[in-house]
Image (cartoon, rainbow, N blue to C red; front, side):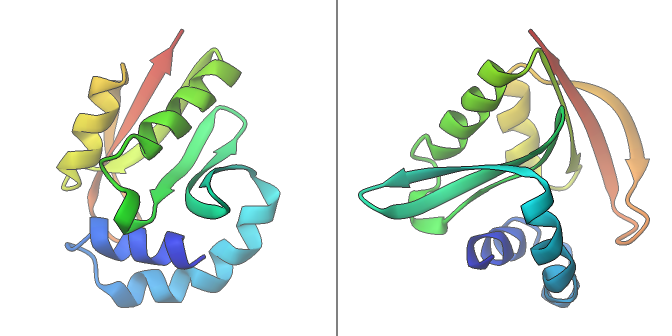
Length: 127
């Protein structure tokens, strides 16, 4: 949960950190209901991905390990397990949008997150 919280506050400077803190308890209950795969090295969890069927609920990488291939490894693992994947990402999180585009995801639709009122993209990947 520490990785989840820190990743969200770091990556979403356009959303108040209080929003993520308010969601903490809810997400803590949701994570065990998802398929969660971790990236671990020498006993240290560097990141994780949460899947709900074909939906990527999120990829979260601890700050010291970002831009070192952890997120790519997690995403590639998910792509090997599924024939298609879908996700939502905030428009303002351009580093994530570019990451997903580089990984073969295409924009399917644009909408508004009802909680944050931020524009978000629904992106899709197919084998």
